[in-house]
Image 1 (cartoon, rainbow, N blue to C red):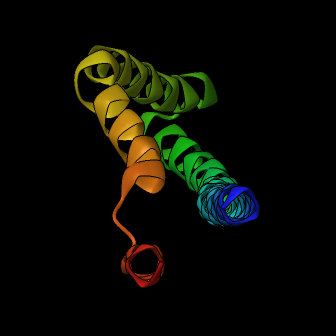
Image 2 (image 1 turned 180 degrees about the vertical axis):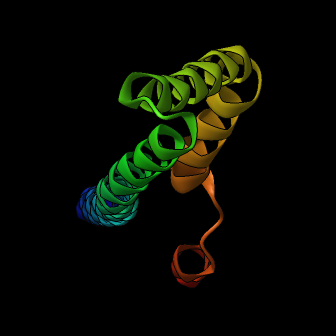
Length: 126
């Protein structure tokens, strides 16, 4: 009887240890997947932002020269473009706290807390 109860506890300990190891592995896989999704989104945003910056930079130069030709003065032409950017900056600051900041927070947390059917099915198999 003593041998049988020792066997039971040893087997139970091994099963619990195996279960904990597998859950830890699952957590590592889920964390790696979520982190890679977040990094890929950040890289996409960075590259898109750089391309958008250069496009906007050259369009701004073109617009500056256009307004300079229309006004007859380089200072006024590029001053109008600077004024447009100043208004956009003020608008951005006004909207950032309310709308943009919330969307950034929501999209970042969505990466980590979205339901993944792939991992849910792994949980059901155990």
